[in-house]
Image (cartoon, rainbow, N blue to C red; front, top):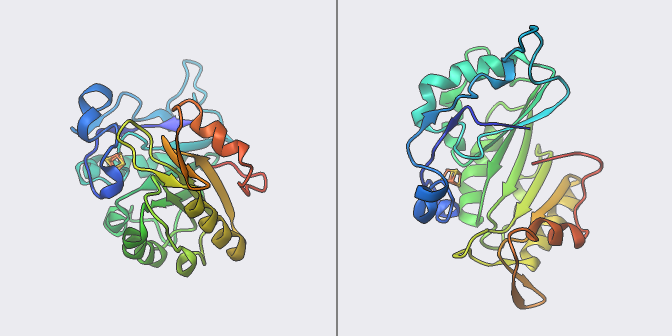
Length: 240
Ligand code: SF4
């Protein structure tokens, strides 16, 4: 299930260049102004009979059309944290490209982390990985995963995988997308195997280099093709 407490975003690193919420398509698909949405209180909203609209046991993935740690949402985030704390029966996945804002964005009772929060740090190339992941690992977080999406080059994650539960990899989507090389994906998979953690090849992206040949992949087939390759190691877990 998705929860978008606010929407709108703008570029923070190279991986954002062709994001639908920033850049050439923002007018059509999204917008750059950061605004609270009308589903802001979704995790704690009640039905007319007084029961929670969102039943327990679900994974709630948040902020696909924005960034949870974007500075424009500073005044709303404390309420979002309070709602997350109020629902220990839900598991929240928070994916960010602004991990450096994590320590200044925490609630006062965070301690060493809430049990029901899984933070995902996004990295698209080696230099971003070398900048963001040491910060990510230094912060008090109980459950961590890495998303290499869009994957824009070969990345060696191995110095950073201790303390990480999972890695997701995906290519870039869109007409201007940069290619994703299957060899890069396999190398990350190998690093995850060595570290003993789960790995999910989520989507190929629009331009997928396989065996040295770049193929154009229809947006509706990118997830299916990645799945067909059968390289994910999920051990029964689910990630977004
Ligand atoms: S941080 Fe995410 S949502 Fe924001 S512009 Fe970058 S890719 Fe898009």
